[in-house]
Length: 559
Image 1: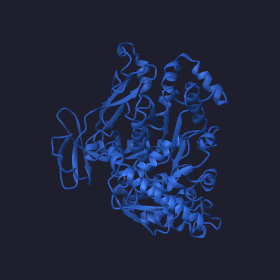
Image 2: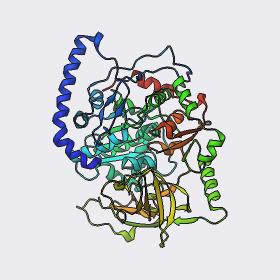
Image 3: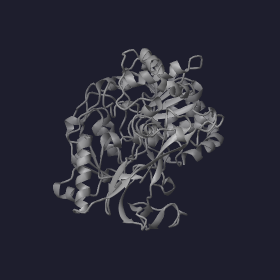
Image 4: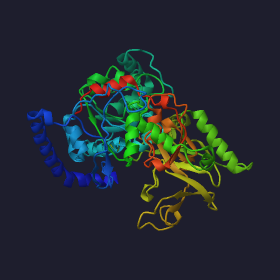
């Protein structure tokens, strides 16, 4: 696990990392002396054998020679690219250390740098794994409560990053819109409101803010977050912000991209750290197609992959009710899930799981202050805190229903938020039993423990009773709202935006009507093995990259 690995990195890997850093320093001197021999860019390579992401198990050497490098070119090209292709800036020491997997040295370099930093890279390079491990590293250096905060734009992304949505942390109501075009004036207006007093106290503690999936954060929201932190911390050092994400993937559902914001240049304008080693996919042609799609190019590699994985109508009938669908619009997903459930129920009413709500003391609250009075927490405050809860109020299901986990409650079994299974039975108590296929039980785990009801050579049955989903109540420091709900939702279909940050075992791509930059890319990069990706609909003209984002990656130096 990532948390268990950090101490090991600190003890054993730092010396090795520093040796590698010294070697890189020597190499930089050689490159300076012989610029004609210096590498102009890092190749995009596949991680080999194991998991060499931060906190992962040691992997084999990278697989070189894929013929894939991060060149940039015009969008929408079919058949081999554009003559305008040119190389991005050469990698700096932090980017090289990341490619060399000197994680502790990278973390130490970022931390000692003491500046806000953007960490980017294509799909599957481990940005969120990097964030989680880096957060543990920084918290070990800044142990004060509330000093290090992780936020993300969506519930699923926040869950994966082990953080909260930025809306809930900063106190933005649903569909919040700025009332002033001036971020400083807007922040001052908000902080003058009574409701923001506890929020201001919380923001004043934040020394480091980490934002995952920055591409889906609108520029004006980033500006106001920056100003709220700045004004809340008057007289204190400015909050150091680390942004993680890829602007060539999904853009915000509304507004402009974060890098166009007022604060971006002052915070992140001196360059970014680029992660280049692909961990999620291992097949060279799959990696090449994802790379080209990332830059908005429907090349032969992309078209060949999508043609190869396209399914006939007859084959689709076998997949329709069995495999998760990734779709552009919410209404498409809702219709697909409902149709699948109704067909399965065959006229009988489905089982309905209704959430139970409560409040309790935050186990991570500041122990130097008095315990909060839970009786003074209103139902309204509780419900507002649960707006962004990843578990819905109502979940319908039945025997045979395809479901997707919404919790990391079963990490000890190797199951995670996003794992797909299907309901095979119900306990006498009504608890659903979910089977996860092609999943081997972790050695040493026996039936009857950790919810395991049974297991075979390549499957495991897990009892899935309701679990707690917590969300901090902003107006009541030290208190969390609790929703008790089954740890899954219907899993026949999800939106492309919800799939962002997830790794899926298999998926049907129904993206012929994708309508935004990076949507096709995000969908096609969720599955590690191309043989488990089934293309229902695809249109090459929908492979789009934002031109301003392309320019950012072309021009911005690598740290």
